[in-house]
Image: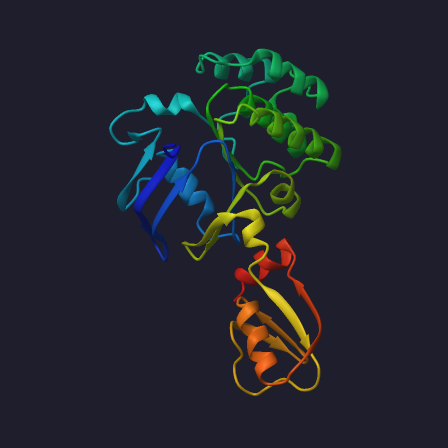
Length: 282
C-alpha cells in the first residue's frame, strides 16, 4: 500500500533552527502521533507538508503527487493549525459556508452533530468565543471536510475533559473505514494512548523514532539490582540511579548479570509516558 504522505531528505533551515534532513512515510489506515518538545520541529514539518513553509531542500508527496507540481492535493487534506488566522470576524454559520464550499465531500450531518454535542454557538463571532469554544468550532470545521487525510496540530488544546472524550470517539469513528490517514501533533499523553497507532518522536529538528506504539512502549526496562551497581557500563545501559539500571537491551543485561552471579529483585518496562519523556531528555 502506498504511503499517504512521504518526505524525502526534507530540510528546512531558518535562523538558528534546522529541520532534518529527514525521511518519513505516513501510512494510510493508521493514526500517527507526532511528539516532541516545543521547538522540536513538529509544526514546521506539518506546515511543510501543507506547503505553508517552503523547504530548503528535499521533496514531499501527498497521495503520490509532488506538492510543488499541483495544488489539487489540498482538497484531500483537512488541516487544523494551532493559529486560526482569518477566522476572527466571522461567526460559525459564515465559517461553515465558506469552508464547506471548498470541499466536495463536506459532511454536513457530522458538522451539525459536533455542533450539538459541543454546544457550539454558531451565531457568535469566532473572536468573541472562549479559547475552548474556538477550538471546538475549528475542530468541527476540520473533521467534517470529508477528506482522506487529516492533520490536527494540538487538537485537544483548551478543551475540557468531556469534550475531549467526544473528540476521541469521533476521531476513532472517522478512522473506521481503514483507508483514512490521521496525523496529530500533541503534548497530551492521553491523546497518544487513546488514538495513536504509530508514534513519531521529534527532537531538535530530527526524527529520532518512528514506530508502532506498543513497540515503543517496550523500548526501555528498568532493573533494581541486589547490592551495589557494578562500576562498568552494563549492556544497553542508558541511565543508572542508586540501585537501578535502565537498559534498552534487557536480554543482554540479564545474560550479563547471570554470568556475573548478580541478581535483581525487581524489573519493569517504563510506561509510555516515561519512555517518551526519557527519549526527549537523553
